[in-house]
Image 1 (tube, rainbow, N blue to C red):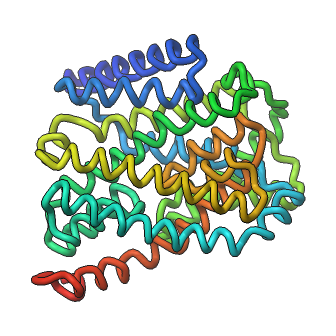
Image 2 (image 1 turned 180 degrees about the vertical axis):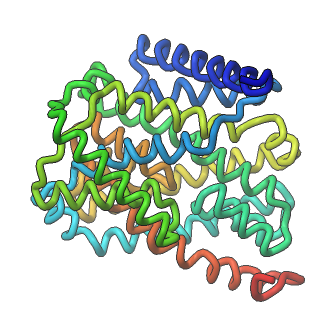
Length: 356
């Protein structure tokens, strides 16, 4: 083994040792999703302190496959029927989320003094990777928009689950609920096999976010058709959360902050506004549909479907509903994103009408 390889392995070991320690501390104080939030905070704080927190790219799809497969188990036949009855509400939430994104973009333009295309890219919830590609197409600086999208996801994960669970008041130990599941070894193996198959197939079909949507689709299909699938052991679910927490936290480093510059205050304020608008939308749609407010807040959160679904799982209510609302939004907004930003650029002075 070369010195370089040994150094890299040692660095990875230190990162994950610290992340697991942070997750353990978070679990001791009963933070919801401790094995996700603890590692996320550890990785982001370490990165902002100047440490190199880079992990293998494969860690994200591995974590997504396990968690998405677990979330898909909520799509029982009864849950599918309940979800299908709310399709109009899901379309309405998607349209209102895009509208909220434009409202937030207008506020961000004034606070950060940036152009309209950058503001919309930073505000409409489509994800850091996708916005980086769109920023390059429209010749705007990718750093600030990636920062805003990453900040939105981090704030959602850090604040929404703890606040929702605290206000709900029915959960004493969030970790105990996720860990107290019946595991059948054969069913767990079948679940992971189907989840991996879904991820690989969606990757070959070039579908966006394949290692979340593919495993989710296949595990949901298995649950809906009453296949003999089973939850995975909690240690596997916790490990998947550690992988995702470190991967996301690693994106938030000094370079990202440096590229964001004076944009940071405006991005923070606009992100808070987006969350407030979506919470208000959740209350309104909940009153209209009769869906419990906690479920609707999780369902209308502007991103972080994995974490919102796990929070619903802790509350033991509406996992399929929360996931379905997010999926409808994803499948509408992602394909429509090029058109949304092309129209935005056309209406903006000096911006190209189409991507170069």
